[in-house]
Image (tube, rainbow, N blue to C red; front, side, top):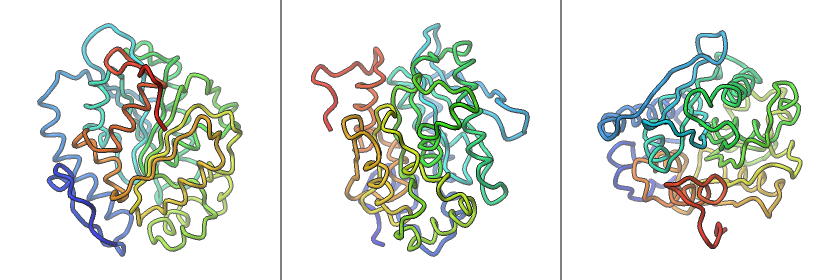
Length: 306
């Protein structure tokens, strides 16, 4: 595949090119290196309130809460990291979302290949239920949530919203989720294009056999899901963009926007938050303003433009 387009901050913190023969673990390790470098710049800007709290009994089952100082109970962005990363990868995106008036929650969860499906989804459901029950005590509004994630986290975010059986099992009131915006995720395990990608092929082997149907958000939609923005890179060789199209086709078109952005590959859809002027970040900002507005990110007078 060709190298990604010139993005100033992306070039500064993230490798220009990832060989498609690299393993998923190697790719995610590079992502983590980029985050660590970005953190050094971001944490100097604001006095951010940061808590780490367990949502379950396992060592891995912890979440971070980021909030600006003050007594306000702000709408919450619930973020799920990519595979082989950790909850701290949200740091630079959290800076942007905090500036828009949101409380940010980022969770750790069990990952493949050390753990198998559906353990990671169980963790995500447990964490979301914890947020709904307890975030009011930590500066967030439990009635106004947005769910998101990147790569594997985008997959988990989509499962959180579409899997109604899990809503019943964990006591999740999905009406509290006002919108969701999965990024660079995989949503249909039966797509032939997935077998072309060595990363997705590996991922399916790790967690989705024999759970392909249960691991496919596109197979579990009801049309009653909250408003959704699906964000995907037009040049994503890692996760074929047909995954985004497949999910879009199963959702209510009146409430769903599909954004396949030319010139963007897999990782820089999310790592664009190193510079929030990039197209994906602007799309998400406008989407949140429409469906989860804040004082700093008010609802546009003319509504959200698809």
